[in-house]
Image (cartoon, rainbow, N blue to C red; front, side, top):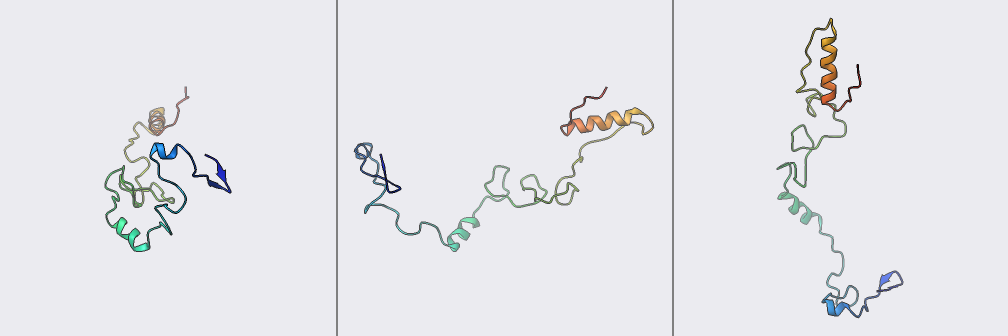
Length: 116
């Protein structure tokens, strides 16, 4: 195929053998504006799969597992899960046991422990 004036040249001799329809010209199937109107878009969204599963195509914003987090979430438990919600710090505050517990908690969150 070649390009003429920025459009595909639809005179490909193998197009008919492959059973492909013409892409340009008088027999083009779509004419005019193929975009749906606002009411059609609203109708599509009425049956949308919002927050049904993590794989849903649409998600609302919020703290639930099937929702997306808003850009200004703070991990305070109100607008998203608390950051250290399931982490328990143990040990005496007066010794190194508590520090070891904090390091362990940070490792669970993705930190690398290179302490000695």
